[in-house]
Image (cartoon, helix red, strand yellow):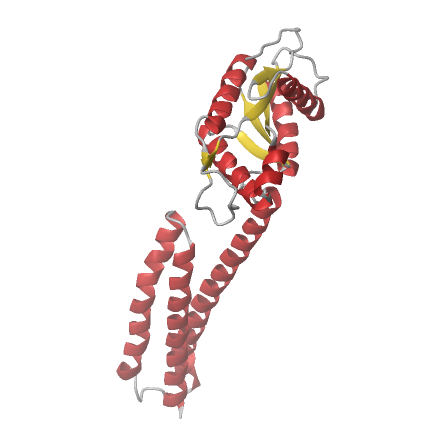
Amino acid sequence: MLNWVANMAIVLGAAGLLYAQWKLAQLLRELPQSRVRTGWKTMLFLIPVFTLGYLGYIPLNWGLYQGLPDLLVPLIFLLGGCFVCTVVGLTYSSVEKIRHITRLEHESITDPLTGLFNRRHIDRRLDEEISRARRYGHPLSVVMMDIDEFKAINDRLGHLMGDYILTTIAERIQRVLRRSDLAARFGGEEFIVMAPHTPLEAAMSLGEKLREAVSGAPIPLRGHEAAPPCAPDTLTVTISVGIATLSATEGNGETADTLVARADDALYRAKQGGRNRCHASPPADGLSAAL
């Protein structure tokens, strides 16, 4: 009887190891290449070795169990298998929960249509960058963009095509940005780029690159599933750009709201000046620029 109890405990321990092996294989598919993944991959190869050791222990000790103290080793085997199984299972569950939380956080700061950040996130980051710019004395620029005559495009081609155009423009904006820049959909057909460590002249250059990236090549429409019969083969879309810069020499009166308001005012003047152009808000020293 003791032999059967001992061997059953060892078999259950081995079953726990095999279950852990299966969960570990699932875990490895979720983890990116890293030292953590390498460590768990090593464990993936060690578990079969321990499993064979468990099963090999059974014939070597068959019939040698004479009393309850002899069950200590099989019990340790059982607890060892349960421990490994529990650790791997908890790790897998933790990774799944972290991925779920990360996905929810990403969705909370991302515009679902364009894939750019949303206004709530850019507002929060802009407050942080203004504080950092003041602390370390480096410039910070904001570039606002608005699609010219977008309402007419929506009315003529429909909102689905309007969404396609917004997505295409967002992709072109992202291709121009530097790693330190942050782009967001500010609302409707407006986009905003926060450019840390960027003085006014460099921000004007960035605004021109963004404008040219959008208007430089027509957007193909023909063949798109949402294209109405009246849609042309291609459509050239332009944007107007407004720029405001927080200079390192400015006082502490500038806030995120006032900086965005200055960029928005420059955008309005770019619209008034004929659209498809960049205009900069006058900085604290009264200088201004326009292209």
